[in-house]
Length: 128
Ligand SMILES: [Zn+2]
View 1 (cartoon, rainbow, N blue to C red):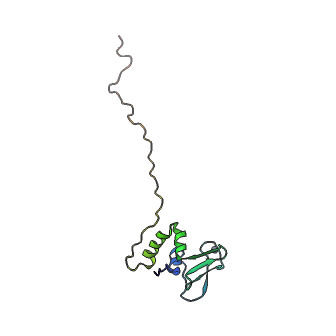
View 2 (tube, rainbow, N blue to C red; view 1 turned 45 degrees about the vertical axis):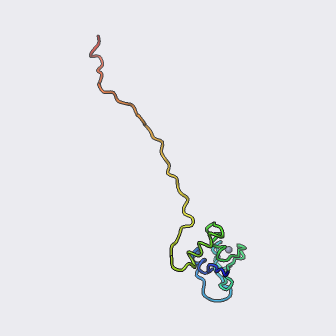
View 3 (cartoon, protein in one colour; view 1 turned 30 degrees about the vertical axis):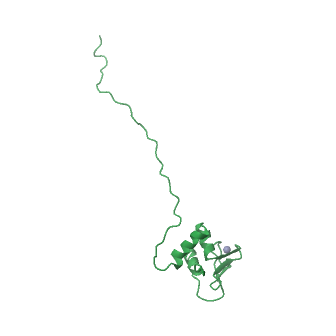
């Protein structure tokens, strides 16, 4: 069963905005995982891998997806299929949304309150 990996170029473009040229051999790229000005990472389209010797990382498309999204292999496959190689549906499913923020309920003040009694008493007017 031939399994097609998500194209490393697509993956790098999707997650890091890196444009990899269509050519053979290893190409130097700026590592997306550590700040640098001179490329120390490289990517190979033939091998469908990228690596950075500074970060000591060697990954294929699946590895990137799993690491970036923090998901398992099965989910990564699903994601890759939908996002990168699934022809046509174009449905982007959020794999992991923002963690839901709980709505804080304020404690309520003055429940019941002080009932105001009607009738004003005058002082001093009605002594017996
Ligand atoms: Zn690096």
